Length: 79
Length: 145
Image 1 (cartoon, chains in turn brown, purple):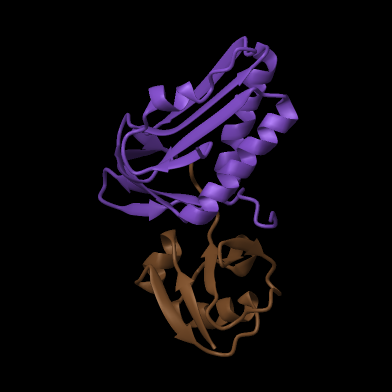
Image 2: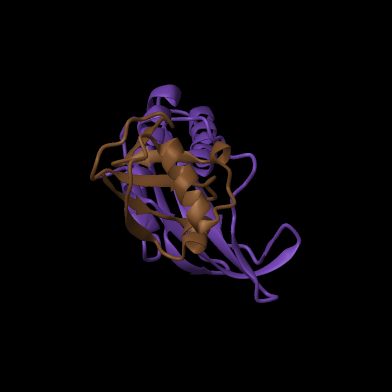
């Protein structure tokens, strides 16, 4: 399966890019974040993030499908 | 027209405020968030805002719809900047209209608080000492969907 990742804020800094396409067999966002975190050295723990798939907030056990757009959302600081 | 907007250019306050017009409204409250030159004891020179636009628009719209229902507003609008901002620039504008002032004041306060908690927008502060950093407040809720 392939996934499209968009990165924002400190996650983009640590990944060194704002988007990438990855191939893998991660079944849910929790597994995917663990894999990507190991590769990019993400310092935010999953407990501090929310996750969106195809523009909608989902749970960490959401079942991923090939082609999904996935965004891990760091704690926000707008306003 | 969307009630919540992201703007890469300076906020058009007059245009946004026209969206509050309503013959039954006797009160209008607005809030402006400005870029200040200090945060947490450090001198700030400028900042950048980044947004996950599709979700930010959806969440901002949901907040305004909730406010209209909860406070019985006649109208509600909000605009948040993205991109690079200087000291004194307006980063966010919130406006509401209601029949009476109690609801207008309370709703305006509630909306800006909710925007700061929920909408996927991030602030990168550039400090006078040359450092910069994305702010990821510890108090941000992580379990809301």
